[in-house]
Structures are given as structure tokens and as C-alpha cells.
Image (cartoon, rainbow, N blue to C red; front, side, top):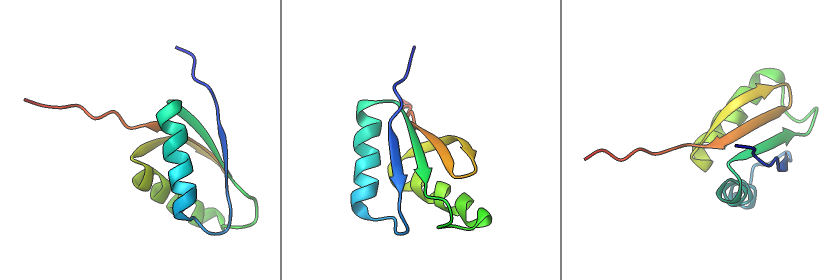
Length: 80
């Protein structure tokens, strides 16, 4: 299965509109590439940004390298 890539740029402030945009892109495509503008967050803070975005969008960051991260929709399994 081939996934489309969508680029979402993260600005200095993570707004509700940004979260909604990522959620919307994840609902259309199962793989979204997210780029944090360089120089906004320190290296150690980027980990926190990726964690926050994953939690807020109910997704999983499968790759985070530098200022670029790739998120996929978190699959929810239902148990009887």
C-alpha cells in the first residue's frame, strides 16, 4: 500500500487550527510528514513537540529526525 505524503509546517505556537489541520490530513491520508521550522525549538524540546502532536491528534510518530517527523493514524482495536 502506498501512502501519500502531506507536509504540515509547525510554527512557533501549536494552535488548535494546526491540530485540526493535522487531524484532517490524517483522516484523508494515513501518513503525514510534519516539519518544524528550524530554530524555533531546541533539540531536546522537539521530542516534547512530537509527543504533544501525537497525543493531540491520536496518532503515532513513527519517525522523528531533526525537525521532520512522520505521523500515522493510531489504529484502535475494539475488544468484545
